[in-house]
Length: 102
Image (tube, rainbow, N blue to C red; front, side):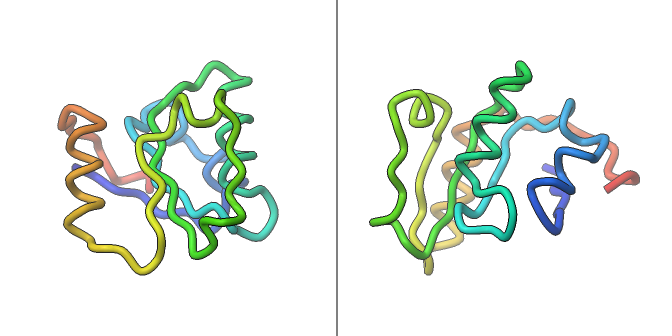
């Protein structure tokens, strides 16, 4: 698996990686666009990738049914890294990507 990190949702959306992202792992509480807003934006533009959300404030995550449809997991910080890897493996088939442009 290849992972690319971005400073913000907006940086991800402006990257060349949107079209070849197999699974997205995002924090819900980010400066600027929140995780669920990123998901809505992606879906509105035909990008329906599986998403793993991470949050320190699960009680503030009021996801509607549409948002839950693409949600693989909602992990509360701190979480077990092995659990994240298991969700990721279950969400996608392992694909090889060229990470030079991350």
